[in-house]
Image (cartoon, rainbow, N blue to C red):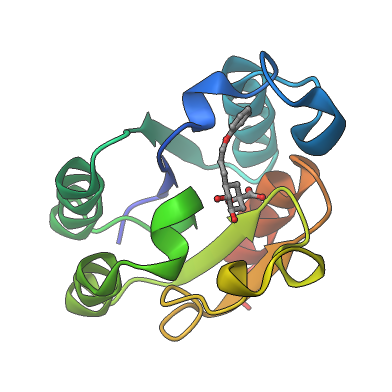
Length: 145
Ligand code: CA2
């Protein structure tokens, strides 16, 4: 096992900080990457930070994390959270500790956001705490809980 944590972001998260700031906040995805880098560094770890608007590419990132024997995965699958059995299967296949993150509280939003395929295979889920959830997820993986 290496000390690299994969941070995987799904569709539309490239728009973070540029649209709907009242919902998703003002931090950009670059700001989130910096937050993750700084948090990982404090724990003596490194990150691979990825985003894609394509389901298959997200699956490629998960398989890459598996091949690289990453210490864990932090994933915000965005809209694919509620639809993608293929992403769930990829996470099952690599069998790495995985923390699901959502910026918003998906349970306080529409019903269709409540059922997460990722949650079925993740070690835990953090939602509703804004982008700080990414830092908390890295800390959880680093402490091997
Ligand atoms: O709260 C989250 O992190 C979500 O994963 C965000 C997804 C949504 O489908 C999930 O239910 C909850 C949407 C990501 C859209 O990202 C944008 C960011 C800024 C502006 C517009 C979209």
